[in-house]
Length: 337
Image (cartoon, rainbow, N blue to C red):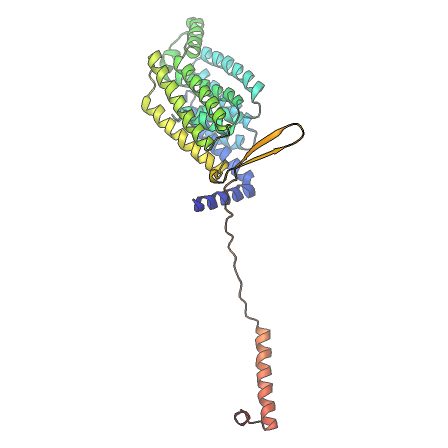
């Protein structure tokens, strides 16, 4: 355990020294993953789905605020939808606009949350979102989480129905608009997963903020279990097609992620908990103090040993001078002894 704590301290020092470069590197990798998944799943426009477009967008968005990456991802999705069907692109643009209205109203500076939520569903690990958002954020984070889930399911529906949507002719534009809107907004699985994520975030956040021992561990486990139960029960009631193995594995990954986040950001020693009581003229105060666990990273000290040639030469000269004086004065060292 102490070794892990030492490594944590080293990582914190490394991040403090090179935070700018580390954040930009993460932003670049996030862009590669995001644009790569979009082009891989709905690459209807060949020019926009090229590797050069993916890398170029990632590089550009690396040096801009995260909201620009969200906008770029939205435009890229709409471009692919336009290449497939104009009505689909129009309806999708309206849905994105409505989501952005809610997004900018509640969490204007948390653009990366929308991307993380959509990527988690794209990677089939949806229940890491309630644990991560509940531990590290506030209940308001349910807004970008819901936006990310809606974006994923809209893209997933278009991907699965591309052939049918493309075959709609010009006379069926109105029918295509109505049908696509009903299919997206009436997706029972999407609303079920939104409900599971929202409930999970609220449960994790409430339990995490309680003054109980191992609150973060309990919050991670309870949030993952609640999400799993809600998704499984809803799947049975709605007769959906959610994979139980996938959501179970996602819940386990959520618990593991919670343990990692606790170690990195909330590592405390509950065995040394202290309860303090004091008062003033108006109130009595009962304080529970839990010390943090911290180990200073050992610093290597290199000792340089250099030979003092000047001092050595002086010592040699003193010895020779003493011997010469002894001979001149006729001092016999052996007799003296």
